[in-house]
Length: 520
Image (cartoon, rainbow, N blue to C red; front, side):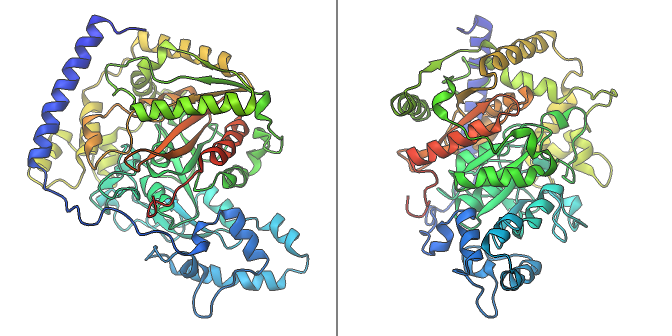
């Protein structure tokens, strides 16, 4: 799968252009203070528990609400703001426990997340909370109700603390907007936690929340989970409702968008998924026990050399090799290294299919329209001019996306369509119903703030999986020499989510899972 001369030339030109732009950026950007770049260690033992452990202790009355405060205050000394309703709901927990005559088992069956704090990506509706996705023109928009997965988690006893930041309109790999500002990575405050569910990644990775909800149409769960050292799951599309998100899915986006759980502990993934899936949970056969020794394992170390995408960091390649070696030694399985040539067209496949019309011929809502709502569409060229003078309400990432969309061809490339169909067939035959694939999440460790602007196509490692419609679990694999999270995405066949969730438990036990960034 060597690059052609044209591809090598494209890679050289792209590298040279981004190098010049990056040099100018470093020259002109203000210097950030390097005084405080890390969090303090977690000292409250309640902050170190999984949702399942915490709920059990609450049901057993081993953790009780203190007079005049709520569970939120007890659990989350790092969190400074939360809705008043959280305190009111927390105040009802002791009452529910006292009134339940059926005992702990009945409570566990009816309210498996009783008293567990929850944070929600701001793109989802949470009653009474903002639902702007970082667009200044939507300032003041509050949700009148709850998105379906939010409602299901609340019904299971979870208590929402509030909503968390995202990239503008959820379409960039860094959570930055001009309404709320920029999210910091809990392992290094000068780096990004990713996007678009970056607020969730940051608050969970920093130990200030227990469980969270994210959405993923190009890596928006997996990239923040990777950069923030936590677990996350992109569910098989269509299992968890995507209703009541902003922006709403349009065109064929519903086929690629997945809502899923984000958390610090692998044991929380499956129960959260079961709850969030509601009436569709049976499709995933989550009650069937998984024996990893009976599965087939594959590893793909890189995409084959896309000229648009950075080379995979050597530490990530080594981490994935270590997983292969441990699987073979621990389980007695054979992990086959494979190459799929279509993966090097991952960005082009994602970009092409995101622009396709739905079955009724309706194309996706233009990005410049979404940027202007509830008013008129923005003019990207004018916004770029205003941005250069510091007057635009939009981020450079959003303006750039609008410019690219405005100038791109509406006619899909037959070559890319063919590559996608070929890749789809190959990977479905490879995985079947018992295959597990290890694949890098991203070429880089968590980058410095704004650096993703100069490597805009690096999300291709996650984005192509969305178009293929496969479930994926993001798993941490310890820390790099710089103290940044390592990780890998674990891909399985359609509706085989339970296989990657079982792998998450194994990898957590093997590599330690989430690490307290303050103590790292």
